[in-house]
Length: 489
Image 1 (cartoon, rainbow, N blue to C red):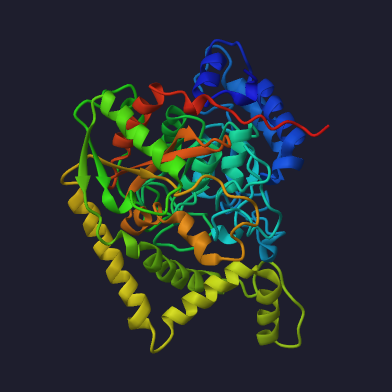
Image 2: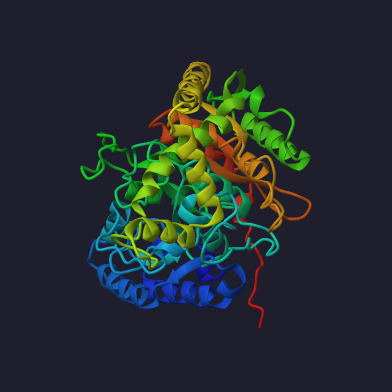
């Protein structure tokens, strides 16, 4: 196995036994990134000098007789909508193409405190608005399992980087499935934590009541390690939950015997690719063999989730993105007056999908339509949350496909926004309810494309997800598979 294919917990053991140094691992990861970045295009910025410096510092902390944090020396990529002091943060938008923040996001501060090695900033759909990373204003990212297919979105760059060995771990953000769906498409693990568990300070906002930062990793234990580093109250984020998170690694290697798995009829109907449905059914049977008990649950209002989401999220986006006016930071178009400057800046700086969502949100909030659309969407959101509350009275976790399909071809859905939006039909309800969910590899199609199993738990019950997903992982081999993308020369 190549160094860039190892997990963080495997590397940590080798660091402690002095079998490897962070400098060696970082060099392997950065060389891998240099070799295949022209093919995958996972990064917006690769931080060669900073990574080398951080690796050297980590190796000093890993020296005999010293105590280093759990993620010391581990190469980690950061999604490019999280502020990094001194390193540009673009949100993959032309309007922020040269923006360099004066501060770190809290998540980045905590990673630096762990002495992790930040390898760079990963590509995304512009301002995290998309399901394929085709909406990036910088460049498209391609799926390392098949370079003619998308990696998912919006955290497509992070998922592709981890899958292809261009980072050991990565951060992602999830507003309606943007961690879990690309994790499914790229055959890695992606966790959307409970809203408020991980600080959003320094995360460039898309929809503030839905956005949440989480880990993208190669296996479940690594996801627990990375969540340990990121979770916890932050006074800089007024929506941060005032709780003391547990050590999530203590939830792995536990039995799932007696755990009840909810199977909602609404998530197992038409619209799924047959190979996806077969993989999910087989995964549920595997969990049964491990001692879990399947039970039927009802999520009656889930069919309204996509419509509700695209009113709530776009309304918040129209408000959040109003700050990009060319006056204070980012791109500025020249004009004779302030109104024209603002108009031209947004026209040239925002991509088509961002403009579409701003217009949808502004319309939904406008006089005469606010009650008919936005308020009605908020009511639907409440009903969706109540459905989950009732379902969890009958079960411990809920199982579903992460996405109704495996990775689709580049350009296949760009001309049909509604079809693209439906890629997140199983992930969006979780964000509307503010609860937690994980996507883990559970199979492959005949075309060798990964399939993801989504497991959902109540708010702040990430431990349940780690217990059941780790048990499934240990009983299968899907998480050990790696794409064979190689340099073209």
